[in-house]
Length: 311
Image 1 (cartoon, rainbow, N blue to C red):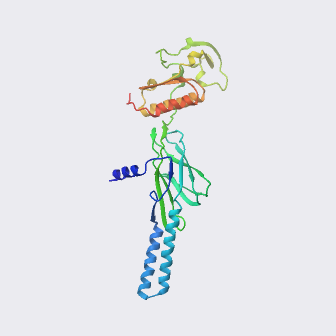
Image 2: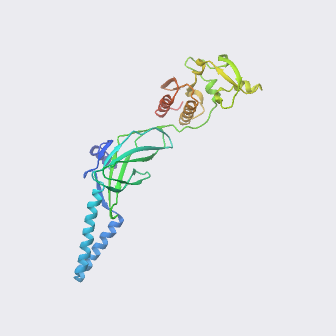
Image 3: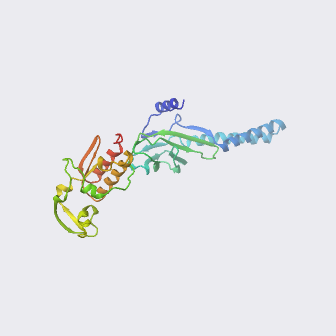
């Protein structure tokens, strides 16, 4: 039943990034306070009928007229509202995605509550002919494409006796990267990784050794030399050797699929932070060696959308 209802709603109200709330999108029902108000009005009416009291009739009719006025005002407080959504930036699993929503109206609309279903809501006012931008949070848990779900806009203005609301589906998907988890050895990336030719990186590619200077990347430290007790030195690799840093699926075979993706995501961020060139090789996908933020996002996107089996 619930599935059929959702399909009917999807067909009637397709996803869009530009929505105007009209009477066929707005619903209205009494709140708990409104139900109590109706009970009191009915009780006053019964008293008036029982005792033939004109004052009781007057109070009852006044209460009913206020309720009818509240229905009109509560409905009009949502009617005509324009909703526009912008692009959503990718986030890492566990972070909150931020959806930018622009609200505009030709009349003052007050005390609007807006948020995604089962998420935190915020209350705003929309002045006449003055669009308001609202940043709405959406929690994430898993990597991959995430549909933000229903965006709910509601109001109980002016008396709190009735609640008017609308649920809209925005035409956006959120790309969620794997959660970066620190681990592994930087030396495995710089000294023992297979490049695309199947060869490893070794000390034969060194031009020289120089004394380690504070602030240099730890990826340049000559760990083998340090292990022999010859002091802390940094490596001076040829450029072509530096270009052979690969984030390979086979680096940490003891990890599960998701843990391995998280480890690779961490090193993608870390190598980009150090401004180093690197590539990605995972089953069914390959990103050639490059550097920069755009390259990092390409690698993270590949990791986010990976659907391979445990290997």
